[in-house]
Image 1 (tube, rainbow, N blue to C red):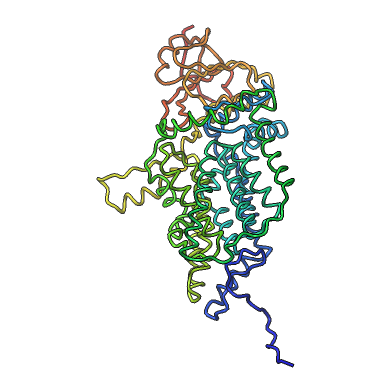
Image 2 (image 1 turned 60 degrees about the vertical axis):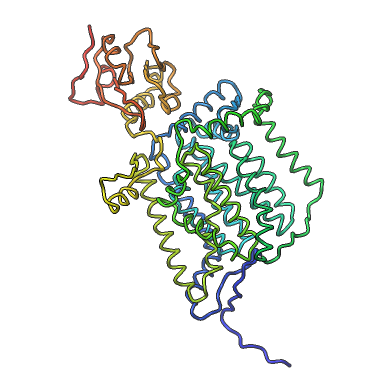
Length: 555
């Protein structure tokens, strides 16, 4: 009988880049003992729940700490119109699909008309994206998928915009689902990945018109991947046997097309919305070229990554070494991610929340360093990665809980030295973009407090005389007698229980007031003319104890 090797306490599997779910990426070298233990912990079951719990904690903690963003106010207003109309009337010039509005409609009807109900659906989708990143362990080494999920969980941008009620998080989830489905079909060929692919495509179409970029880049990446594998071979390049049937494919197509028709047609009440599926691209291409006030230079995403997203920055750099990856899924993610990054860079219209749809593939490339570093450098590489992730977590906490409404722009000042400019760069907050100031609480806190104390105060009279007052129309949407006046429109009677007046209209408004008011300056958001707030003294005197009104009208 052939002698057997001695039994050891733990057998460490060989280093591999297999996509099997039970694959381990460990090193048998004694010099990498600590690194091997770290990877074993990273791949453990408890780490799965720890990453998910960390993501949930960062997303849910103090969810209402920042006022509603301008776009959140717009989205909430659309939901209010759904309550009146019974459906969402899709507008092809709005550049956003209908799914998000129907989910918000359901959330507000279940949990009330409040900021938590507005943001909670997107928060759950954001947490789901972290979970989905870990599901990539079916096509990638588990340690790589877990590293990417951890980087996503502590990313300043993924946390910050995951706490906004906007469409981009849905696009993130569905684009991840789409690519997971494609990779799973190639490596596994099972029906569940067919559903991932179909639901991912349908979900992107239902979310935002930029889905065309993700679909186009995914298709272009396929021939580029083929060329890449001819230059440098990969493991298991041949596709797996496809185990799904034509009936199952027809079912996936039927569900996806049915969902698109159902939502774009306004639940069958607005059939002309179907035409918006192609009409929207004329307006979208025009906006993408002109910028419409949101034009940014081609290197804009690079500046955001350098400021906040260091794991993604490492991943972007490693894309240049993608020929070293023997795993076909990693190489495809690198090629596709670089293509999406380039496409979004070319478009002139850029808003920072799109960053989460652009850089997520780079987080997987960041995690792939464990496949290409020399064995003796594993522990050192893991220590550096841990330092990068810890820094990312620190910035996420600072941004989301201390500076979430801080407007701090950056521009290179030639009068300052390089060190001072770099310091200013890292103290700026470009993610806080068109964010509502806490100043609006001067109006909303006393008005909402009155109404919560006595529902009769939901019928107080308010005049908001200024352009672009969002998010106030949503915040004050339950009040029945608030008017909004832009341009040269004015209310028939100027006096009211409160007024918010744009700076250039203050003189004219004050000449027509007769009551006494407490006044305060109020600015809704950056790059907007300030306003002056008037609170009727007889109604709001309890909020100004011991103070006399500072504006006296003409009696």
